[in-house]
Length: 301
Length: 321
Image (tube, rainbow over all chains, first blue to last red; front, side, top):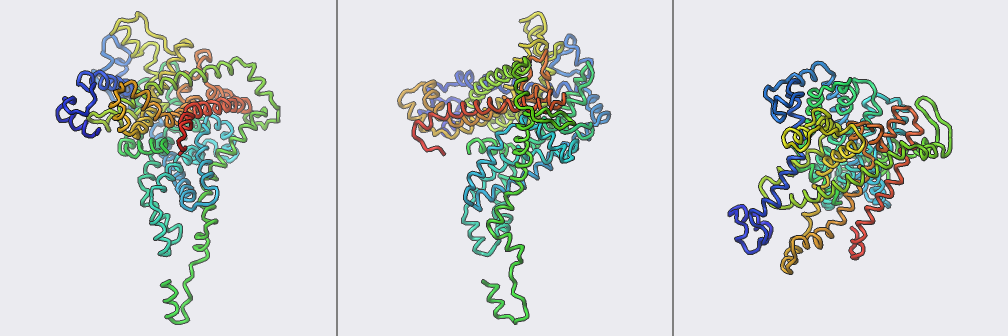
């Protein structure tokens, strides 16, 4: 029924011509009730990014003078802020560290949660649902409660100020989510396929590697993207466990290294934020559908 | 099967090709279960369960950075109860969570209803809407900090120079109440996409036939929302709200990035106060006590939102899947 409505609305723009459209679906009303609020939402949701982007290309004179320059546009764009950021600060280094940490923790958590999800969903032992629930419950423990004791644990392990600490700690919030997501995916793969492989004499690990995993690739991609963005964005652990400037991740470094003195370098700050957001934004735009499905899939479970 | 027949036919010299003990071990189910669960459970046990217990223990000691503490009983908590800063943080955490959650859900639900309509470029729009959610919070918080600048705020510019609604710039972050509301606005901005997209997924599972039936009965748009959409969405609302409340109450990044608890400590959340005392100030025991004091609020909020909203589904006698 809804498909028919779309079709008719698209083709004729006068939606009320078909009998089963809603009576209020006139064009003017539709503009008022849907397009107007929707565009308000989009403008407000995107404005900070626009402002971020436009600030990073503005020369300082324009940045701080709204009287003579229209603040919403740039009259003479400049790359000075980005140049400053890339060549006069340790920004490339921070980007590299963040990338290393994000990729490392993503792979670690994918590895751990694939095995765990396989054991819970496919090897089925007594109490496996409770193990699944227990892992999921770990997601409800927020990092704000954990970071102080974790800091002492990290010091005990001699990992303080090392990116390795972050790679090991991030799975605490990545593994529960990924496991839950992958359990859902494994559930959707017919068990008969595995039984066939078992009859053919494959070992369990061969089945996991050759049969189940190839079929669960969309789930793995969703979980991977989610883990990557979450670990790229992580802040409180990186702030608490990393001290030396060189080992900081982008979000922490921008806030603690670039914000200095009383006069804020807004151009450089915004350029740093823009560049720091770009990798996740690009990554995200390549895999939007996986991302949305992982987000909504987890909620629906 | 084929292996054994081959062996019987071939000469005795060939050693029967038994799978190695390693392969057999890995096919032994209990062993395999243990192996598969070890990485995940191990990571969670070492870096989540153990610190959680350690945190509770630390809260009862006077540990500082570089010195092992001794057990001091409830001293930390007694001190917190007399500490106006802690009470201020409790107040603002509750206020922040309540107002921001309400705002996020009102606006997010509205956005989800809007996105549930049919219009061109729908998937593109859905992708755009999620952007505030995926971009690092600290970085968008910096953008908000710049938007809230006392001198060069774009909002002030709009209100003063373009719309002429005010004569002076708004001092967003300079005094307590405006600062509190500015942070809440930033939090709502960041939270809307998650709520909207999750609820949109829920909306799409509602069968259109329910609406058709209601329309045949002459239900108005409001009645359709009130008696179909809303009740059908309650279970998913309960889950999303539980998550939202937990992560808003324990929020750290936004406040730390924009105000660091100022002006005059008016915008401290419990998490930022714990960081300030525990890591920056070195009083690990006291910081842990502040962090632990969040737990009762979280448990209460979770139970409240979960049972408060999910109850109706049980009352209807549906099975809880």
